[in-house]
Length: 421
Ligand SMILES: Cc1ncc(COP(=O)(O)O)c(C=O)c1O
Image 1 (tube, protein in one colour):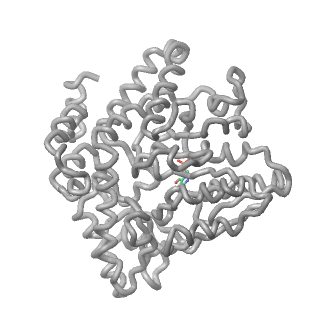
Image 2: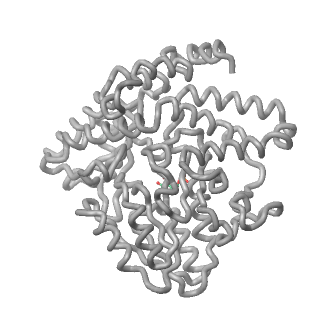
C-alpha cells in the first residue's frame, strides 16, 4: 500500500500517531543504544507503540492471551492482501499462493532459528498439536504423559486417542510455585514407563503464565526413549528462544496470539526425521510422507491471512524480540510485585522472573474467580478471564505492548480493595 494511503486510512480511523514501519525505524534509531531491559520502563517510547493500536475505549483489555489483536499497521496490510488476492482470484491461487506460503514459512523458521524444512504454517495451535497427538501410530496400551494445566483441547485430543486407540494417559499436576527445575522434571519423569511414547508439555502454561524448563524435560524424556511435543501456543513471539535449543520433537504455536497476526494462523515445527512418524490429518498426494509438507494439506483456505504473517513478522522485528520480551516481563513484574504480599491476594504465577514473562494469574481469597472477573469488569472496567480448575483459581492477566502502567494501577487498586473484603 502507498504510504499516503496508509496514513489516510489511519487518519480515518482516528489513529494519527501510528508509527508505521518507516517511522518505526526513526523511533527505534533513537533508542538503539538503550538496552532492552532499560527501554522496558520508558513509558514515552511505549506510548508511541500504543498509538499504533486502535483500542476499544469501553474497558482495559488485560485478556490478550486469547487473541493479541493486531496493530493498525498489520491490519491495513492485511486488508490490502484481502483486496489483492480477491483482485487476482484463481490466478493468485494457482501461480503465487504456494510459493508465497513457503516463503512465509521460511521467515517463521528463521524467527525460530531452525531450518525451513522443519516448519509449516497451520491454522492454529490446535491443528498443529492435535495432528501430532492423533497422528502417532498408537498401539493399544501405549502411554502418553501430559499435565492437567495443559490446554483443554489437547487434553481432549488425548482422551479421544484413549477411546480410539486404547492410549493410556498419565496426567501430572504442575505446582504453581515450583522450588526448582528438577522438581518439575521429576514430576514428569515419575510417570514415564517403558510403554510411554509421547510426552506433551506446555512451554508456558496458559492459565498461569508459568514458563516450564522444556529443554530439561526433553533431555529427561529422550533419555527414556520418549518423544516430546511442546505446546508453545503462548510462547512464539512472546519471549525469545530458538526451537533447536529446546531439542523437542514437535512444537505447535498460534501466531494470532503473541506474534499478533490476524486470526487463523499457526505454526508446526517437526524436527528433521520426525515427519514420517506422524500420520497426516488430511492426506497430501504430491509430497513424500517424509516431508513436513505431507502434514500440511488443508485445502483452499484464506491465503491473505498467510500473507499477513509477513507483516506481523515485520512489526515484530521492527520492535525487536528482546525489547518486546523485556517490556512484557516488566509489565507483569510491575503489577505482581505490588500485590504479591497483600494478605488475601493470591498470585498463582512463580516469583522468579525466569519462570514468567507477560502473563500472570491472580486470585482473591474467598472470592470465586467468576465473581472476581465480573467485579473487575463491572466496577473497574477491566477485562480478564476467570480460571477455576486444575489447582488454579483466579483471573488470568495478559497485558500487551500497548498496556500502560496507569491501567495496571487500576488492577492493583482493584486487588487491594477486593482483598479487604
Ligand atoms: C496452551 C494453549 N494451547 C493451545 C491453544 C489453542 O490455540 P488455538 O485456539 O489458537 O488453536 C491455546 C489457546 O488458548 C492455549 O492456550
